[in-house]
Image 1: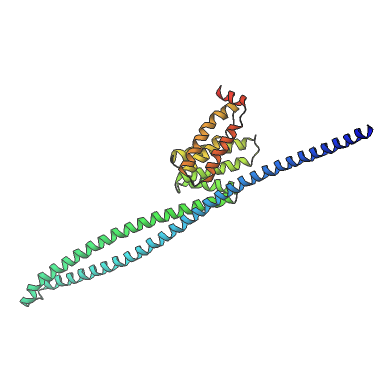
Image 2: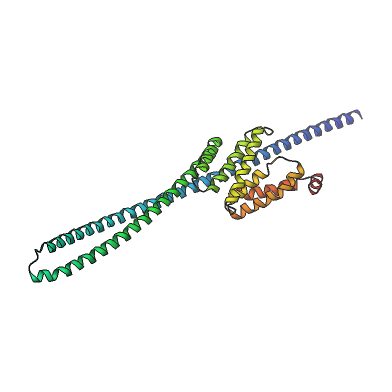
Length: 306
């Protein structure tokens, strides 16, 4: 009997050790799964930012090629204008000489005198034609100059966007926000493209501060203001909807207030995914919103309905 009891105790101790090791293994597996999920989200976010930077660089290269083509066309048109002006000057000089000869009475031969008015009319006709050609060439030159100015402005705007995206990838958020605010103050580039980037920079600066600090709250308020202005400037811009929803979801408040505002957040996430289907972040945020709502407890749901 004593041996049976001793054997039973040994077996119980072995089962307890096995259960303890199994629980420890499950805890380690859960930690590794959480770490893998967080790593995936960071990699996905950085991949989206790098894709945006590459797209901006391609647009910049295309704009530079167009500018070179416009410049070559402008040089050719200017050469044609110079030739027309030279021909006009020569005709005018010949006409002045013929008029001076006629006034002095040096044309004595009848055949020469009879041919003189015809030559003058032909010279005048050629002069008018040259003047019209010069006017058309000047108009073409103005159009080419205007197109070159527009291309240069587009080139400068693309370079500004590329610079801002590069600073974001480098996580230089403070210099990025300074660059964006300076560009907004000077009126350079499309304001909506600068505004949503400023909202994004404010969100990143807020993440680096203490959760309860006033500096963090100030960054979040500024970011929401930038995102609101971006939506007002371009209601059909997917990035404006995305960052407005992100910053709207970070506003402080009670649980009931956050749940009620979350439906507006969901609407803007859906709109961002609709306007920019190539952006994986918006679709990811829609799924994350659904997951968080599914985790709400019964009491939280009741509080939201109150």
